[in-house]
Amino acid sequence: MTAVSPGAPRAYVVADLGGTTLRIGRIAEGAGSAESVRRVATEGLDRYRELPAQTLQDMVVEQLTRELKAYLASPEGARVSAVGVSFAGPMTKDGTVLAGPTLWGRDAAPLPITDILTRRLSVPVVVANDITAATWRYASAAADPFCLITVSSGIGHKVFRNGEVLISDSGHGGEIGHWRVDPGEDAVPCECGGQGHLGGMASGRGVLRAVGRAAVADPEGFGRSALAGPAGGRPAGITNEHLARAIRADDTFATRVLRTCLVPLALAVNCIFTAIGVRRYLFIGGFAMAIGPRFVTLLGDELTKLGCFGLTDAEIRDMLSLGAADDDHCLIGMARMLSQALPAGGDA
Image (cartoon, rainbow, N blue to C red):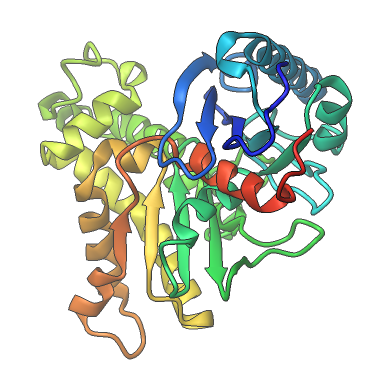
């Protein structure tokens, strides 16, 4: 790696490790977008469901290390000050991943990922939970408290208030996707090993499973829907891309399933509002963004049915909005975290 000249603007290599995709790019300090972003499929649970959790964890760590080393050795990775990684799982303040439900499922050991990457790479490393990182993209632009919720492979959230993300040093908090909203014995399973969790019901994967079940239970309704053709008439052939397209087109069958899945998410928003009074909710994540504005419209329908104590229907809908229409949330937020974490002039 080429040394950084004194006084030169700092630049960082930033990575976003999600359950489906690993993204690595370069971002200059203060920039509003990442450049030279590379994307590869994550070598974890999404691709190799038959493998044990510990094996998958080892594969994910090796892939992350390999891809970061390759990027740092490339022209795009030259003259950088640090590496920042956003990680899809709860983490302690010292950078230990406690779980990776969308990456390797359950029953893997806690992962001291910051220590591992610091030993293996030639630059300072900061690792944070992915939603914590994404929150910092919006933190500087909003003085009022807000809640960022991602709806993608799973569901996560973080609340930003009084200049900080509300989470304990031991990594607790910000995992609304693992709130049990269905206590029934036959509740849908979650990839963490639990049952009835919000993420297992209202995430992209959860909604896809729900629409597959609905297609089997109602073959006539499925056959009339916009999902049938692209899926080849097979419930197992439905993809999230098919589903998002059908919902954007107001397909009755697909929209009905999504509305059902959004009820527990509306309950979650209602709970956060009632508990701490946050009145701004930003939604990001591949599934929510693929559906687009209709996602918050449909969620608003369910939330107004529930009601939020003291608010009118119009005020409830005004609380909900989509984040920026790109997938750079974690990368930009991670760069802003690095700017704060590294002392001025403290580049390696």
